[in-house]
Amino acid sequence: MRGLLFFFLKILKGFQLLRMKLSGRTPEKIVEQRIVTGKAWNEFCDNLKTAGASLLYPGTPRDAFNQAEGIRYLTRLTRGGLEAFVEYGDPAFPVLRRMAHETVKMGADNPDNYYFNAQISGKYEYRIRGKRNTIHYIGFFTQNGNYGTTGGMAPCGSLEHTDLQLEPDGSFEITLSQKPRGKNWLKIEGTTSMLMVRQTFSDRFREVPAEITVENLDGRTYPDPITPAMVDEGLKTAAMFVAGASMLFSRWAKGFKNHTNRLPLFDPEVSNAAGGDASIIYYHSHWKLADHESLVIEVKPPECDSWNFQLNNYWMESLDYRYFTICINKASAAYLPDGAVRIVVAHSDPGVPNWINTCGHREGTMLWRWYRVNTGEQAPEPACKVISNPTSDSFANR
Image 1 (tube, rainbow, N blue to C red):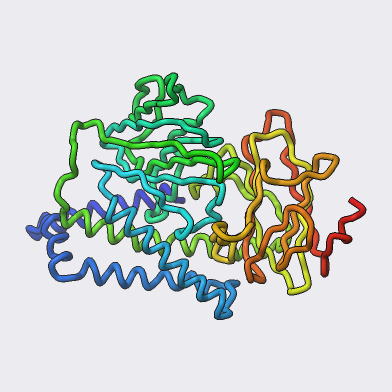
Image 2 (image 1 turned 30 degrees about the horizontal axis):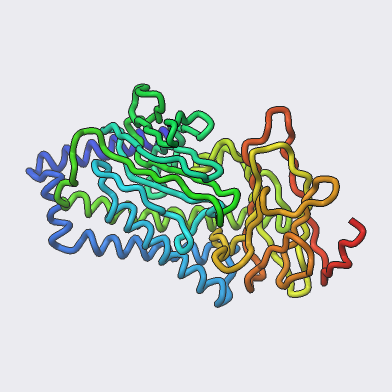
């Protein structure tokens, strides 16, 4: 279906170009007119306004608290979109930047991750230089498309730290090209538009993220002057990013309500299409607790590189991990004598290990991840149950 849609869009674009040619107009002149008349800006504002529909999508909470978070969420996406596609949107001179971080969040952003993104293009070849440092995991990925396009985020190339060849001092170089080059190669294609770097902490407070830069290999040392087309396209993509990402995750959250307070397996094809890591098994869901209730999650982890659990608000933003314990992972968890782990999501501290703070929320979304489960191991679904008024005595028999 998507291929058929793109075929018709290509035909439509061909007719539009032919019509412009016959009328004596060029795409460049049309873009210039859009800029000088203010049409580009007005359309950006109009398209941005449509993102508000995600806050009123069926199933979204309509109370003032959650809607206020939703509005803040849209402002954060707008900030991130403008930085990504206007300020740093030139693929000829890419800049690695943190698109998701402590105050720009989306799609169950992982508090254990240190994300980098850069806009790139299959027209060029690139080189990444860096130093590994002490972070637990690092992976480099290329994507075809982004949330601001109709094609989604199809995975292209990947290079993980187990395959990354380092120099004796911990430094490395990676070549991004359509054909294999060098001892560290990351695949790109003609439609590639994004470089993603995922770094995952085991201990955020002790590990040092890698130092990374990216450069275009065509020899340029500074970017070209801005063009009307760059600004026009950047505004279009930024607005589509805000509207597209917010609506996508509102739809996901509504679907998660079909299994509230449980953690079933999430469809890997869906997560991969949205930029997920194919080596991670995701368990997304919705949670909702009354004032006297807590959610208890128990599971015995399989042999795997790592795992983590996090709590989000309804809009799939991780809760504020700068000040509250809203996530837990393999290294930070306290374990039961049999090797299982019990996590308690509660509004106040029940006096037991592995307490996850709801930070004043009564509902939201949540996510469990298994990272790179060992071959032959089964990835179990975490068992969940809601209990009333938990205390440390509630768990004395376990």
